[in-house]
Amino acid sequence: KAGVTQTPRYLIKTRGQQVTLSCSPISGHRSVSWYQQTPGQGLQFLFEYFSETQRNKGNFPGRFSGRQFSNSRSEMNVSTLELGDSALYLCASSFGLGVLAKNIQYFGAGTRLSVL
Amino acid sequence: GESVGLHLPTLSVQEGDNSIINCAYSNSASDYFIWYKQESGKGPQFIIDIRSNMDKRQGQRVTVLLNKTVKHLSLQIAATQPGDSAVYFCAEDRGSQGNLIFGKGTKLSVKP
Image (tube, rainbow over the protein chains, first blue to last red):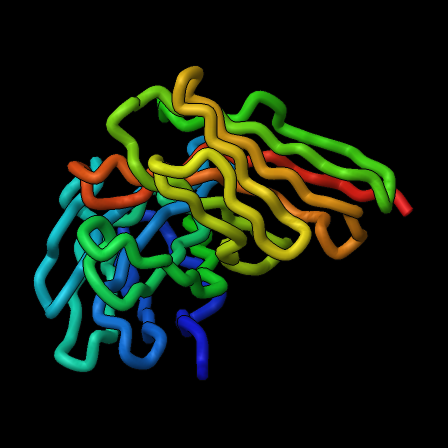
């Protein structure tokens, strides 16, 4: 069974640009969560999607957005990139909703975004 | 800052020794905890979880202990191997927030 796949693995962008990251969950998983990982702040929750609906959102500005498709694949978008957006962006999938089903979240390898 | 944190940022152990990684949490309403291992260049990998109605759970070479009285979680790795070298995170499910809250992580280094 294939794991969580994130593309691309690496990205270099400049300030002011926008970026779209992609995540394909484990087959059969319907919940996708996104996290930002930085050395200073650690792993911080961005948002969670289930059945194409955003179910939960972390404390990030509106420049960070996401969506989920009918096949459970998810994308996140960051507009007007800032230097501080440089981070590893991780996607995690689980079978059901993260809280109610207490499902284990399985992570992809992440997309390393560098903003110059 | 986050209320789920780790007492030590780094831990160095000798191969074959037992390792203990600690984690403190502040929300007594948290009812589910998970330990993840993250190797360089990879995403976090699930190790073991525990619910608040338990105080101990064992896996293969790993044991998680939960002390709700002092809001403390620990991960014990028996006979630590070089392949155990990684950053270990505890994560807390507070239920009401609908997502996991991660600690900062402890880097475990295993000396041969």
